[in-house]
Length: 467
Image 1 (tube, rainbow, N blue to C red):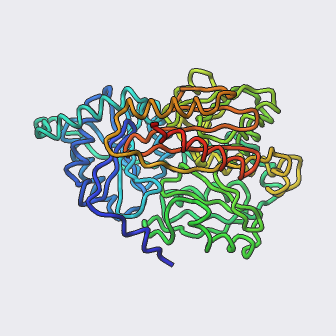
Image 2: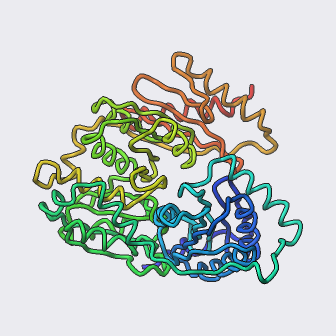
Image 3: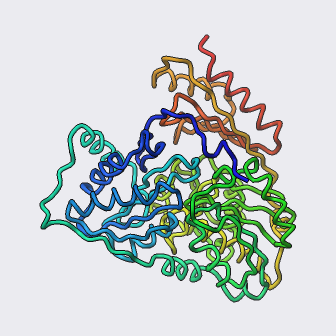
């Protein structure tokens, strides 16, 4: 069943350019020429060496990939082409091939008419903010002038590479494969017609799972909104108990995020993905963990149980990775289902998440249902809203509004790591301005839903109160 809202966004939307990449509606804000110019801007910042490129399954992917590859080789660099590959697979390939960097062509969880480019450094990670900003500035300059193309003799070459197997082997190396095979989990997974289908079945079968796969063709023909949220998956959740599965997995189109569901078809979400993965890692190797400041405190509580420190970073995958490297972390991630295990790569990885969660379920030699694993987790509820800012507000106005939010909670601890974060004894609230829209997002976590909503309401009033 195809969801019309997944294929008919508002038109005439601008190109969104950030420090991590760009995205837009293909044929409108995002054209082949725009993609080529952005790729040229990126490679100018890289050291010598080839560039890895990959894509998810969207129909616009092949044309964009060709335009990007042509621009790169015309500037004297070789291209290593993964073709359809997940975002974490591209990250692994960059390191495996000693490449100068990489480009993943994907709009992640955005609807089908969108596509985008995500940029990677030679470390196989998303670009740090400073490097990403340098690319953005070059791109803005390049759009005002035609790109410089080298002489024909300086052209590079395009070479197809096998990228799935190295990624598979790295994931298998971090878990106790035999313990998972012993309990023979039954797994139901929705690859969402994205790049995850290239590795999902091979990985799960290598782990000894009995696998039911839906959304397997990587053709970008999304049957539901691509973001794996509860509302988008209502018609898919009943398939999990119908298949007799022990667990349900949902990937987004580029397979860097994972949502999970129980054997009964209850949506457990993305926050629990990171928490369960952290529990699995820390049981064997207690060490520093990093999460961003909009992620559930559940992972903090689990780290404390294992005697491990858990550090908060600013929002954004690059910020998490920066802090992981600083802390020599054993795991990091975000509450959107993105798990980063440095033993595999410095990229959010749904395959790592699946393997770690299955290992946790297999702990002790018998298969423990997810519902049993989480029953002693602290009862925490996250609620979110967004506030549209009044027309004409400046950065100073936003800063003043954040101060009003802080002042509204005089007994709480205040952090300015990213926006304003209010920390209570039994919860927290984050108000953070969008980098691309005139809105402020407010997130709160508390022991129950009513408490979280009450905190959000109080903060929202303070944010807009200019009296």
